Image: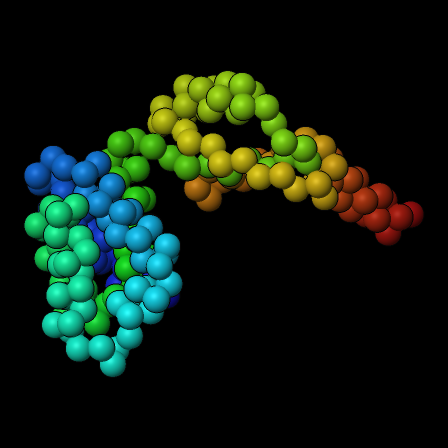
Length: 183
């Protein structure tokens, strides 16, 4: 929980700068570039997160690798993370930045669970209907869960609509148990 608060605080700081400069997209792309680079080379990630490596060495490596590709503010943000020993929070910071960027763009992420994969056309149509209903651009992330048997379960933020056969069977079972107890 503390790590999440730390990540949120750093993400808010860099997001504030991005918004002030009207460069939210650029900052998000560059933060993602760094994250993808660290993920692609596990040795680099472990080096970057190793507390035994002196801060200046980390900064020198970051500068050599990313100087040509990053806005000066993003590079200095990475240096700040090194100085404050927050390198291990970088992935969470990027995730929090993405949430803030989506909020600024009026985008909400939603999860849809189905027993079988839905065709892309149906997903897009559902996204459009949900966008119209909520007044926010909805980005659907589809998941297949064969245990649902049929129907759909939709989650947008803290709201869940469960119209699955599995849920209906559970409700039917509960209702039948109540009727047996009443007799």
